[in-house]
Length: 227
Image 1 (cartoon, one colour):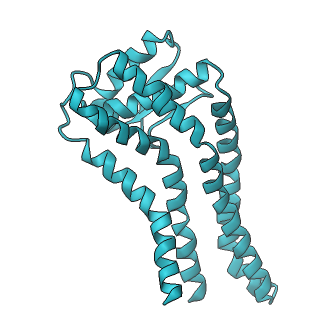
Image 2 (spheres, helix red, strand yellow; image 1 turned 135 degrees about the vertical axis):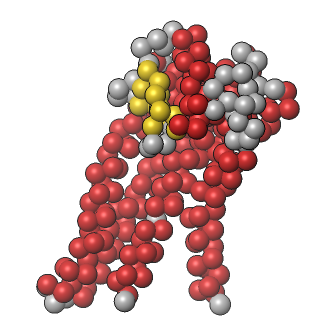
């Protein structure tokens, strides 16, 4: 019974944030024509108003983000082309990151370095997970396979820790920069301000929820290894 409760709690901690983020984003995608400007148009307007003419905007399939290395603000096709509350709010959040970059905001620089570091680490973790059954079989030492598997878990789990450490940059982009921008330029309808706050919180938690959800891959590998 205690084990079942622990499993349910762990699943809630891993899946819960991702479900909440997706639910909030989806809820305010309708109506798609709520605002006069699309997310892409608003992002361009806010960047130009801040003097960030060198920052490009484009669509992406890799999730909404600002790339400080190449100075590109990327939005999903829906957020770039639609005029929903979600589209304009997420666009403003990513503009917040562009403003951080222009002002050499310390937490953003650390966030960029940490994410660049964790990407190859995650690949190592995935390789370790895949190699764990073969390591144990080839060496005829089940303990070696288990150690390799545990190493993979710890390596993949590092992504969650790294993204949690980057939360200051995310919340700063949402509430110190994006929300004041939206309010100063009177982008939001009065009844949408509370909803925009929820969306900005969701935008700030996107990386963490994604990292937590990636831990589900560990559970899948565990089931495979036990067969």
